[in-house]
Image (cartoon, rainbow, N blue to C red; front, top):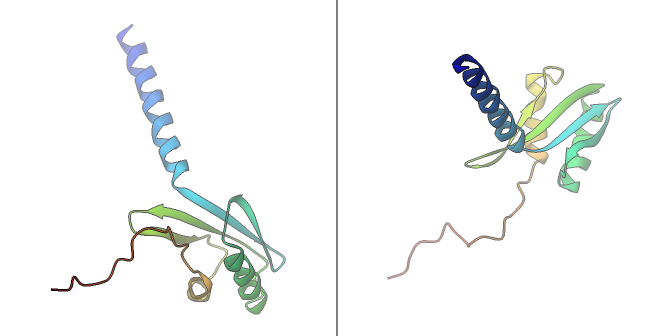
Length: 110
């Protein structure tokens, strides 16, 4: 009885961890034959066009780019099929969406 309860709690905890991990992903873009398309979520249209250009420029035939929510905004993660030297061109076309929150970055006058 106690063992069954422990197993059930472990399964519940694992499910919760997977749910939280899954919720962190803002979007997933796949690269197929030099074309970028959104597989999951909503990627900014300008970023999708930029991914198309970078994929064609570097002749990428496959790969995956994920936008993962962190405490500092959305961070890009790349699959192994995308070489390390191509990560920066993708970051260069990435423009984080504005959240409409306060102006920030201004010093108080006084």
